[in-house]
Image 1: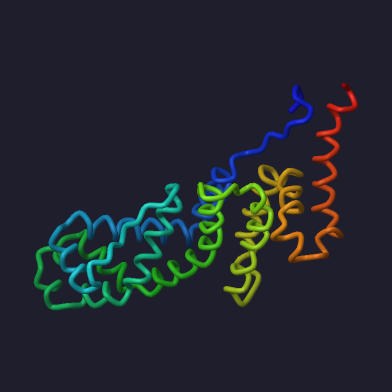
Image 2 (image 1 turned 30 degrees about the horizontal axis):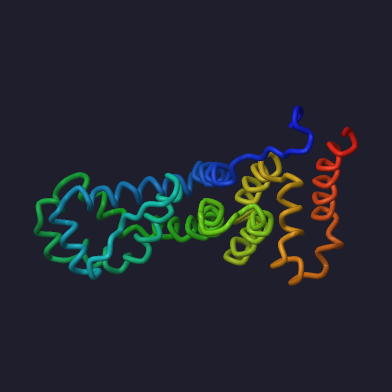
Length: 234
């Protein structure tokens, strides 16, 4: 940018959002839930007998799905576990499980304790609520169907709304918002994203007040000034 006065350099949006997910994963409640969820899925998939037992109950649906990043994959793992919650509880309390050799193993007992632990499922619900909106943004910016630059500003702004609505009090999500704002302000809050938002017809014509948004119009003017800086010199 110092050498080429009419260009903007910006961080990779997908990488930035993945870092946000990684920072959220460092919160004890979230990190412990992910760790237990991954361990539970790993235990099931490492034993064909248990895997077949689970598939018979849930209609051959898989627990493991792969996302665009490691933390997106962890989110999808918890999402699958949450959907299979009733099937897993049925399996780990069945006579077939109690008579199996795995029920007597240390890892089997840990897996059973995890499935029957209400605190774990509360953690799963919390993690899905705070990570879900960000994973959706990650899919948007990492997709190849359409250019994402013009949607990033709006997507990041909207990502907070479902998180806030999911909880009754601010204390439940204030740390999450602090993590999002920290990464956004230092890595993605560029005039380029504000200009893309302003010039996107989908948002410009939907919200007439956009032209009075100081942050958005300010970003647009900064981009124009940067482009015109070359013209002034030539």
